[in-house]
Length: 134
Image 1: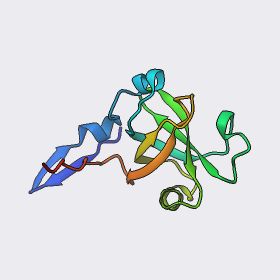
Image 2 (image 1 turned 90 degrees about the horizontal axis):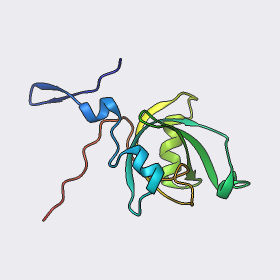
Image 3 (image 1 turned 45 degrees about the horizontal axis):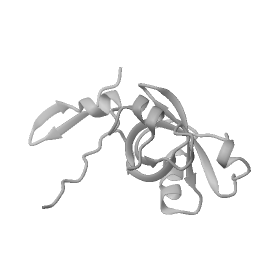
Image 4 (image 1 turned 180 degrees about the vertical axis):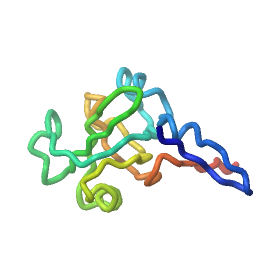
């Protein structure tokens, strides 16, 4: 089993959310209802070549990415080519292996299991959301 640890001020803590792959909303809720807001998704990501529904024949515009969520299974994500996000993901996934990533995804079609990847929040599952400044 893989555990993520965080070291702060000479204290070692198990990073529970990163270890279990927690999302900002439960994966099953996202799949069932979608979300009008972007979702933080900790996934195992891998390059793929699956294009269907709204992404059929869109290989020139989007790259298919297989997103494995521990609590659900596999979603089919897409990232727009020739963008900063695409370059970031390709730098990580171009070795052909799966990698644990924290991504910001958003619904882009009527199918909630085919999200659009908007941001790479972390190249691992370790991720601290920015604090709101009041």
